[in-house]
Image (cartoon, rainbow, N blue to C red; front, side, top):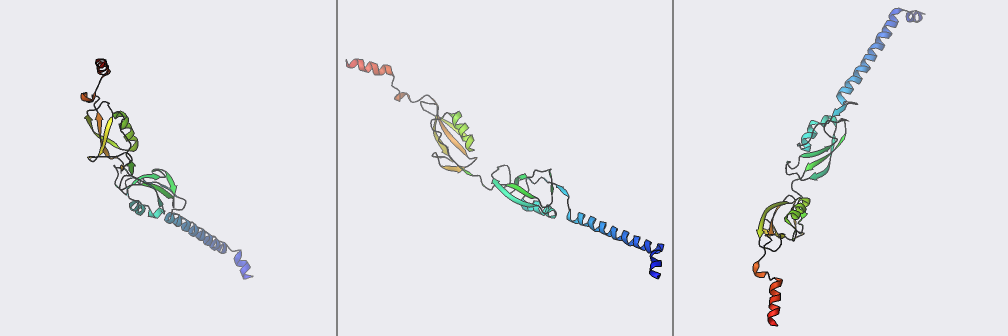
Length: 200
């Protein structure tokens, strides 16, 4: 009987209300704290990682749980070897924590390419062909020759044969004919005809 009477008193319901209110506040406080500490559901703006090393970026973004996967290694003469030169997702985009990043690093040394055969090509054709291989045209030396074409190709002061491998972005020297030739080797058709007539 006393319990039934107490249930209908205002003090009982006030205590129930206070307990429920405090419990609700505690639940919301715990959820709020977890969201702050774990960044739950938060989207993070991707930093520009170009020019940094993986370990430097990893230390700065460790709290977000980002993972880095090296997708490729490319030689870039303007970049410091071992630094990031490309990334995916791009800088400025928004991602969730734990995201995987695919990055491209600057290689220590350039790749090797095969020296093309430039003999008998014009200087313009030879230069364009070298560009497709990532090779630079250095000094152009003019030598006596009948045609205005490449006579010889050099790398570091020595003749380089077609197919020989050299580092990309290397510079080669070309010998190109002047188109004049050697007069001592030129025999005209008129001279041949005159010689034939004298025998008759």
